[in-house]
Image (tube, rainbow, N blue to C red):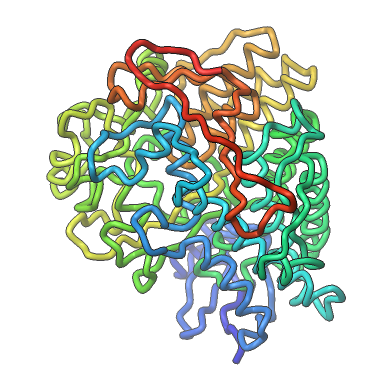
Length: 547
């Protein structure tokens, strides 16, 4: 059975709604024919060069395996913390100074907030298990497609290679020190298509250095990019309705931009970010929309890649075990009803207070009166969420703007195009072109977020620091802030008056306290590894620095 979603170029000039118009008013559009024979028309300016006349074989076993790889990212586990990749996003953001939640018996992410990275802590292992489970599926695809037979198989192979690179990039940042500071230190075991079956059957795997891990990451993403340059294998062929679920050329360039940025290869990061911008159909959200509640629809104009959640998914039917129920403060969800809403830390709040015209100020509120864009049902939910927690987020909206619905089918952002603009600015500044980096930073923020913004820094590190503030703000709740902190070995100062005492921490940049801990019990097992003694950092109001 074929997947009969495909695109046809419209043969005439039509209005965006499909009705014929005069020559003076005509707009070039693309006609989209769906599997149920329904038709839609989208302006060509909003379509990223897709005009395919063929479709994928859905009964091809590789098609099903690729679907399982992306489905795995939203898989719900046996406990409230096991919500797929979004658990990593929430856990790591809660380890920064920018997100906090209350300490009570309903806070399923409190272990990460207090840096309880004990190797035998089951939820620390969950992160290891998630990421290696993606690698395991990707390895199966790579092994099966050593000699791809056609464009269709090249598309499947590109997805597997890109996802394997993404999974290892996550692992090596969490379980090892940054490449720039310790490239030849032991990192994690490498499992590829050559040892996949044995490794997941329990055969120990030798530890690889950070350098070797990045060699594989870059090799995989380079191969994926070369495959995706073929215009016949656009990721939208999988499913036009959920095209952002898959990795297209723009996303692949965006991933490589992230990898280069993490490695402190700034010129390469800037170049890849520009290629990503030029290759994607996504464009930054305009200021008038950016400050509104939302960030839950992969079809938004600024999304490049996301986890798409449908009403029938387990992730949409869970009241507790899903990202939306934990992150949204305007839904009748778990966080709202148990006073564990996710809130903005004081340092980031204070930065926002210095920029009152920034539309992102609207993402955080102390009272209902500040939430002027919410509808009454959302206001009712927010009243429950606010409690005694200052700076509560209303960035993430609820499905259909109806907090009372049983479905939590909110999509989850993995990459937005705004990130590419900020990577380009940082990359330019840090690779020697400070004037251009500053220009790019100011142009982006002024046009899309704050018309009054004006950074006047001249030193590259000062520009980088300002980009980091913008990244901390722009991607709050999207799982990037912790990775920024560890890639630059920045201090964590979280002696924040709004935090519970057990969450007040100070940790020096580069400390082993930032490393997720490995255990001899984990699978894949590490050859010759013995679980070391664990020491948890000291928390408290006195603000002791942990080295």
